[in-house]
Length: 320
Image 1 (cartoon, rainbow, N blue to C red):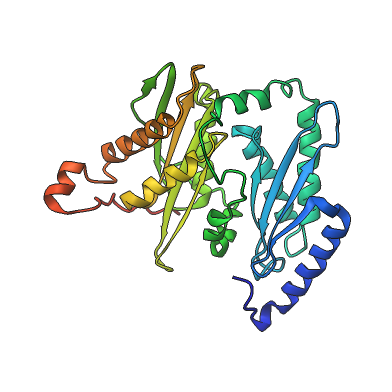
Image 2: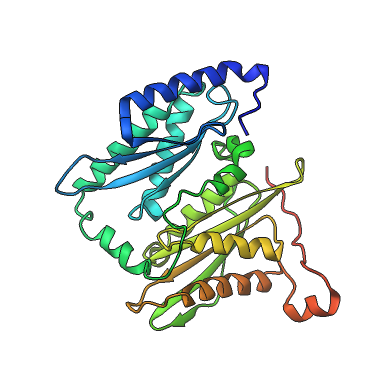
């Protein structure tokens, strides 16, 4: 990715080298180099409070034109960070980037996250949150690589990073469809679907869904999306587990298999107190597939068998 440097990016590379050296000096063992050639790093951040210790891992990729023209690509891993809190923290980081465009901002991001951890630990909701997420994430199911940082989805978005920083306010919230529920052993799953053609619309859909108190109260809101970039003939895609380990990646894989485009699927799960094991992934994907078929994003299995067609494209939706 960044191992081949254009002359025009030499200034950015030098800035990155100096910033990484400074961060390594400041944070010591908390700063970790994952892949120096690809400019991939992570840092473990804590609130430094022994009585209610919270931690988060910030994973970052530095694009060739950071800091002059692009933000770092980032992912925050923390079991307790979900829903509205995740959106709030992401907005804080994006605002910092906009305020300091063209500058090195990783230190500001790290300290903003640490400040967020301190505020979280001091709130009245801190004590129960981590245990709730751990219990319902059903971590007894084998996921051999769940502890290994996964930068694959981050790499997918490197070239399109600037799209996530689009603060234009002239886009409308896409129409959101709500699918039928599946209930198993007191856990309930419900899918939601929206057409999306920009990452900004992805954020708008999430914000709109979280305005619904029932959806906001779900134990997990897992989502994945795929946006086709016509000019580059490639896909912009990503996913989120929201505390349900590995569920987001499985959901994105389903969208890839069905070859759908310009769509976002969110599956809400309300945990009923009984562990479902691998069955939970089956319900999440079945919910997602059902609503994709209902909304015409993919042919039914019978139609596909008869016609040999893989997909049925929705009409293109232009945004201003």
